[in-house]
Amino acid sequence: MLRSTDTRKVLLAGICSLILTVGLARFAYTPLLPVMRAETWLTEVAGGWLATFNYMGYMSGALLAASISSLHTKYRLYRAGLVIGVLSIAGMALTQDMVLWSIFRYTAGLSSAAGMLIGSGLMLSWLIRNGHRPELGIHFGGLGGGILVSGLVAVAMSALALDWAQQWWTLSLLAALLFIPAWLWLPEPLPTTAQATHTQTPPSRRWLLLMVAMYFCAGVGFVVSATFTVAMVEKIPALAGWGNWTWVLVGLAATPACFVWDRVARRVGDIRALQLAFAGQIVSILLPALSQHPLLAVLSAALYGATFIGIVSLTLTVIGRYYPANPAKAMARLTLSYGVAQIVAPAITGYIADATGSYQGGLLMAAAFMVVGMGLLWKMELSSK
Image (tube, rainbow, N blue to C red; front, side, top):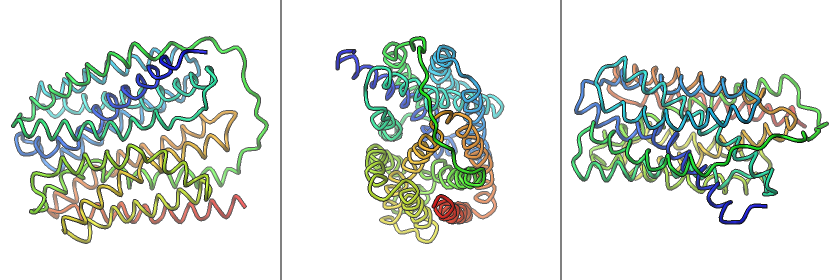
């Protein structure tokens, strides 16, 4: 058994990897989008497409991760993802060419998959191997922490009046610092000596198809807010200049969300907890769509942060419980569904915003998909009884 100090270092490595590959490589684009639009040629449509390329990279990385069984290969890909994350962030500061920006956002998505999927899998393997409870609550706290860090850094950079390129350079330096513990403190996996035998019968094909469709709806709801929250807040006159602080609020609400939703699921069940998370996110999407009141915008950001990570963590829990012998195949289908939503929805929202001058249409679209997702959860609940 490793000492507790070693346990803390390994968990810190996982958290740093998530902050680097997800918080900075993926989510930092959200608070930087308004300043890039103000100081470069970037349009609403182009901004949406850059987000789409990022999610294409994430989906590509997720499918690659799902196709690999060797822990040692995954460990090498995890480390490659850390390097790619730092380089993709720095690359954004070097050019204003749309093709190069698209490449950098795509590779940043690959990095996010390495940190979120491969790194989390390695962390789970390490926890089990060393006799710890196989919970990823502390590790997944790095998701909310990554949003929080990206928001706080964006606020600080804005206060220092850094231009868009200087902000990307600053983020790349922070990523390089996070790279050190993420690289050094996550141990290489040991050879697997035994495989646990699971005899639980998985649910029906219809149930899995409902789950895949539900996760597509969740992907639409997640990505519209994740991409455009800061830009939407900046359009509210009373909150002009406070967009980055709103992103900080999203991170503050998201950081403890996995723990909270785990407690809720233990009391009411996983599917019912997912329904509650969907309901909360629908409210968070509709508030800015129906009103420009600044207090409602703040409430929307907090509610969004508290619910979107809950939906992801609860879904992973459900798949792990119903497919204990081989969750990778089921998760590959879910990842593909979630990824397709994240490719399509930002581009559509960008076109709607460019045509109407408002994000309202994109928000209403996202809310409608989330309502459909709630209906699918209700069907899943009935089919499992």
